[in-house]
Image 1 (cartoon, helix red, strand yellow):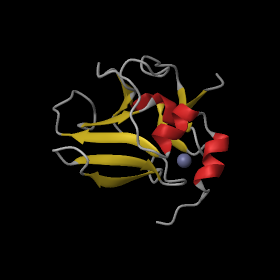
Image 2 (tube, helix red, strand yellow; image 1 turned 120 degrees about the vertical axis):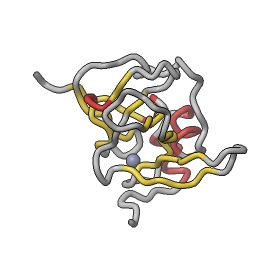
Image 3 (cartoon, rainbow, N blue to C red; image 1 turned 30 degrees about the vertical axis):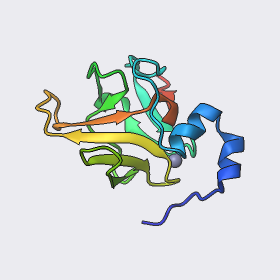
Image 4 (cartoon, rainbow, N blue to C red; image 1 turned 120 degrees about the horizontal axis):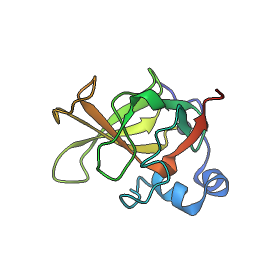
Length: 134
Ligand SMILES: [Zn+2]
């Protein structure tokens, strides 16, 4: 699937904070328990901090005690998956399907008590939360 939003590195650097740029474009990881959405469970929608696409619904967010916002599912078609071989184990990187921004990783088969046995481990800095109106 072709990305719908394409910008140069210098355009992204102007739009994003240095911390957001390091994660979304440089695939860095924020420090655990540092993110503003780690323990947020208000109803609403989590959007891509770079392009604003809707990525995760708050109803799929759960407390995984891992120090990053965790979701058991993503909004259909909103994210893409890539093998990440930067560590000894192959991890599955999650990126925004619209702009290609790095969001985090997804882990499966952890025997979590969630409706789907997978954990999207996402950087708060990659997300922008929009609360529901009611
Ligand atoms: Zn995006």
